[in-house]
Length: 317
Image 1 (cartoon, rainbow, N blue to C red):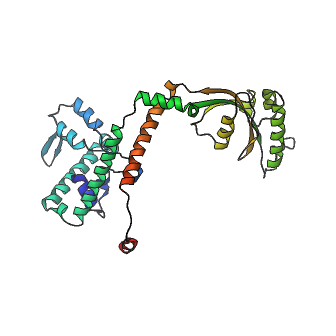
Image 2 (image 1 turned 135 degrees about the horizontal axis):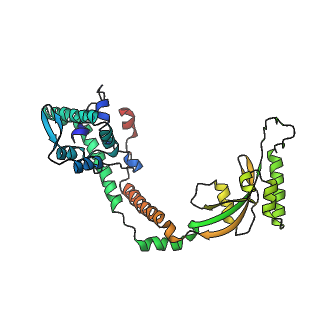
Image 3 (image 1 turned 135 degrees about the vertical axis):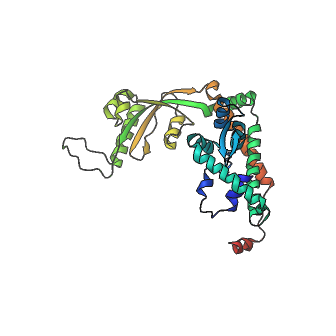
């Protein structure tokens, strides 16, 4: 409580840079990000190498043992612990300055006076609310049976598609070619017409690899007969490309798909499903997140707020 006391009580304190490095961060409750303090790995490692009763810091003539420092650091978040490890001298100075000033503040009962009392209460409630959310999240249970059942019911989500492509690029404002013998860039209209012609030829039985090598502006895949990649539904691919690909059966050809600088003709060469063991960890996290979200939505629903006097909030601004 001592650390949060000073950080909330003295918002205009000119020397707040001494406090910021060790202040406990509390993420916004609404965002459900809860970086609460964890065990202090840096302090634990140090205490394992130094006897617990060994004096490691002296402040104003008083020695502090490794165990005492470990206990002091136990509530700090990872970023503050990293600063302690990298620069122990300024970090310890800040820590003991915070302790000294907060002790002085409590000696004169500042924590019982307004506006400090209210600010401390707000900070405490925020911290405890975050801690409660984290506690619930840690206790969410997802069983292997739930994971397997979800996988079997939703196998289409884990479908993969191996694809080949022919890419026809276009430019509506091409720069004049420096080489008069260079290939003239196509306009969007010209590229679309060419892509539609190639798509029709492919659907009539033309050899995809041959047309890719002769026409595709994606030279890397063209050199491989158009062979491009195996993509998953969950991957961050352009939505129009994914939609076209996953509508196809193995061996089928798409209509040209327009993108920012060109048209893609897509051939699905294989249709598979990721095995359960490959997606098991992903499934666990997904189901855990869904359960947590359901709990949070229910909590918000049962704690619905109705503003009766909106003018009150306008006045307070």
